[in-house]
Image: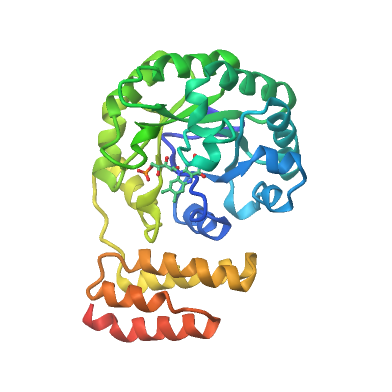
Length: 323
Ligand SMILES: Cc1cc2nc3c(=O)[nH]c(=O)nc-3n(C[C@H](O)[C@H](O)[C@H](O)COP(=O)(O)O)c2cc1C
């Protein structure tokens, strides 16, 4: 598939995940085989009103490319302004969030609220397209409520407005994360548009990745939650898609090595206090499935300093033989 200057064969993408897939994690995932990543959602209004924290979310480093930045909102003027601002950071593409069900995002008329206002969604696309020189992509859910049969028409509208690619998370906004992703509707969207379609939702390993691609006929896939604490998933899925082989699971010491690297990047990029708070949940994800994880997870929520983190890793290394 082609997206601007990018030419990729069935890309395996890292999903945007606010508060989780930050610069450190994105860099790790790209290093470990993710073909593309997308930044955390950024409020267009925040950028428009000069909020520095919002604009920081648009920053794109060379080590996390190819990367798209994601905007949310519904105010055309603010969306266009934010898209132009994003260009300062030379993203590989700009993505518009049309799926987030969070109340704060819907309150802006953006995210999944756009699924109910297709004309606004299309206007956002057509107006932003006029001012940017990189591809414009959209990430949508399949409707607001189960039974809303809108996905195909909505996607066609985006394509007509000028979208260069659409990612479809196969859930309704009201479902949040319950139920299972509806691959049939993703297939219908793929069949109805000529731009590339990326399939998203519940991909957890090589087999579910292949199933998603086989059922939907999508041009690529996007992985969210299953990558947390497991950036190895990108290499594993790619190997499986290439030759049907299931590579050996990473050893505990390999996991610790990656966790340590992520921590080092995190404290390089964020104020130390923030990095400390955030690494706790990542530690817990890396420990998923490990023997005795429940007690260890409780312990990682007591990490307050670099030394606490180093001590915790030392302890885990000693435990390694019993795990
Ligand atoms: C913690 C978290 C944060 C998320 N933040 C965003 C976001 O900023 N933008 C977005 O488009 N989707 C966001 N999502 C949705 C994911 O990108 C993805 O569509 C969803 O998790 C389904 O994929 P999965 O089953 O592979 O996790 C988020 C999901 C999670 C779990």
